[in-house]
Image 1 (cartoon, rainbow, N blue to C red):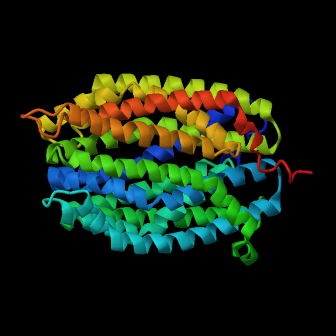
Image 2 (image 1 turned 90 degrees about the horizontal axis):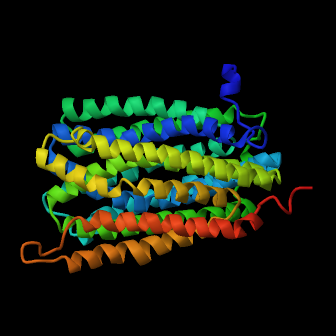
Image 3 (image 1 turned 90 degrees about the vertical axis):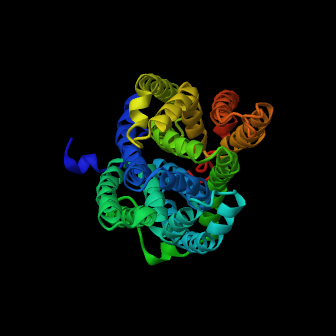
Length: 463
């Protein structure tokens, strides 16, 4: 394979399904791991150079950060589904208009988020009863990331477009460049210039802006696949509404998940700084453990989208079986590694032995849940790729709003004692495990029903 072929879009409508899925997933998995390094390096540098309270501050800000960025998640998913189906159907003009409208829609969304983030960050943190010892750090971290969100927005959305075209290599390369830059800036800003929590926020904003510029440069050179002219940037009702229709459920899903995290963060805060810091460490390790599942889910979206666009439903179902099996095998290995090396992983973030032990014990509760998430992400990816973004949304609403949040607070209430007036902190992770397992069961049942097969975007446009 030549360098040019390596960076070319991948046609997933031909060849062995499992092979296409794995080849597409590997660079994306490496890229997702690299992206997770943004937050992880932030946490390591903050924990080592500033302290555990600063680490807790970064973690307390994360749920609100995710909540304010849900617009971009929706646009990215909608773009990926449309791009993959139009690419599979070989509809050049529709593909060009979709990409152009995404670029414009992202600019508008970024301006909205920049304003909301600057205004709402402190009030939201106060509403969640963020401890006074860390609230100033939390506010500083959030405001900087919100005001500088355009780089993150364009990177994620342009990456979604590249992946919809079957190009996961370019996104990986640009992300690796940005990750290295982020690590260097983290060390310089925090350990050398003593900028504290604000330093890691500035480092992330700069690195993400660089990755966005590189992705845009790549798209401008893909003139053999689509056109990128001024008329394509003009928002048209057909394409804008379709992006929103397909992406809104995923955005709502992320919003619901983020709101649930915000609500649960309030419960987490009630257990004190030690549990807050442990939760930060667990979520950082969780981010890496979940990466294969997210990567397979995105790969299945692109695979399903291209094959649905090409009217190859037989390949979609074959790929769904093979992709899910590989995802399950990968998660089984990760679960074993977490159970065996849990304490070693936690010790990367802090030198406090009590915090290491607490984090490792709680991580064991979640470990088996990664098998359930392998099923959820893979089959949800197939449904989204086919154009059914509503079903995963409803499943997320049920598992998060109906199950996870009430269960966490209910168990906390039931486990209260004079020594533990807020209940047992273990309920935070037990409720999450139950949520994941129920999500896998519901996703499997809805996939087997097969209503997602009727949602193809190109059904009425393909001659």
